[in-house]
Image (cartoon, rainbow, N blue to C red; front, side):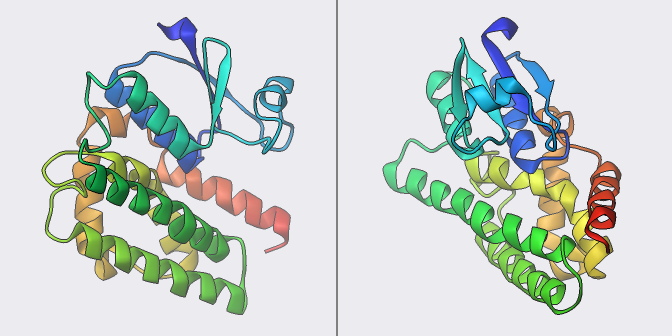
Length: 218
């Protein structure tokens, strides 16, 4: 089955990690091709000519782009194993809402924090904290966002867990002190092999970001 699936990705990308977790949850073997974000391969440009970005999952030669769409595709073609989205229409819509929230309120605010200095960085930090507060409120006292089982929202958000170290280091604050339930949830997720083997090392993420910041002149 490995020959049927090819994943174009980048090790520190939370969106690439998201797809890797989904594939691991489903037990789908795949070939991973690491892209250079600053010198994109002809294959990536061919498979994603619109956005020209990773991740791209190539299934039998056909590309699927955008990580949340890829995850839903993976779930659709393998419903018999570890369903990621709830079968109830409302619960499914609710899960999709929070997956979308992560992409709109966690990723961009986290980037605003690490890719800036001064007032712009502080604004990003404030917005990120507001987004994390909303995520912790949604989690509540449940083991996972889906309740007792790991699901779509967990999978959507957990690739940002190894990024917490970078947010804390550059933003000079403690996510564990501010949001202990989220950190406990992250540690719980990391007990799953599908997660722990799919996520990047937090220290390598920080090294990557510090390299980017140096190129930006910070």
